[in-house]
Length: 420
Image: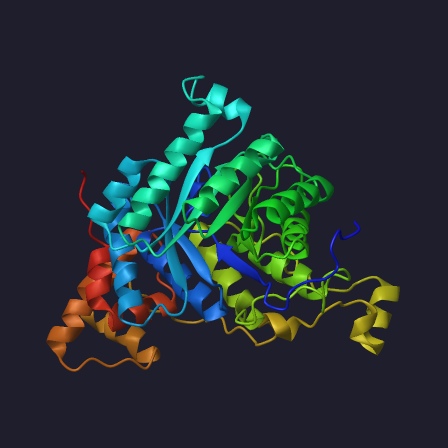
């Protein structure tokens, strides 16, 4: 694919906005607890991802979780990551969000294709109505001190290009920080998405966010092709990812695969700049945690983190890899945080669960080298750990146990909800 503009401004970056806690959790048949969603935000922050789309502010069971995580931001625990909420691009959603939560970053979403105007809105909304709804919601958010607003064009890949340019221009004129191009059905290919994004970015001069799905197996290729187009046109690019590619239907762009593609593909490395805060050595940890939390195994052939990503068996490959690993390995496993031995207890194990007693509970925390100042504090944390196990419906990992002990007030909020 030939670039239409080989001159790139030095300040144009590719940044990552992870949507595991919004789009990933919408995957059929799976879910995350609020504690698990919080841990993912913490791990994304460690990994240097610039933003987590962390939930649905107008969904009532998310309220305590959202405000608890914003408390972690306020306390400096979740920093510098930005936490943003997803809502429909209508004024009532913005109003309810600001009433129920302390969110300062939003993505507002509305459908832009003729198919969805007819099939979702049942022909009751014209293309002009869509823009009016979006700009009204955007204006309301800006007037109420929302710091950043991304505007989502759902089903952008099936939308008329001239209309998308008109939509993006209106968003920019009303103060949007970026426009999200959603390949909602995964029907784009790297060539079509490049051409469409380049034209939008060149004409509107607004940062572009790529949100792609994997229905045709092209999600990573489409994501980086769209990012390339935005950079070539002279604006910043944002790629939406999920951990292990989890997402609706065939999934979203896998976080680790996107990073590897930008760092090592021949057309990108040393030409297109990835956000320098990204710490790839956290990849193994976050991928394994998400797999455990979701209850979905990592595919054996998953780039970077799959069990076979650095495995060699055939004679020619094994011989070549032993002589020089660059013969058959494009990057090093250490870069992904792999290689450390994983200790698995094969003897007696004491775990902390929903029916744990104080003796077993103390044993678990002593192994984590965490001590309590007195019996009262130990009893209070034990009660929270019991709730956490009910909440997760599976044994807590060490980092979750540490979190509950370190932030008991936040944990209380995470475990509390009531029907509206």
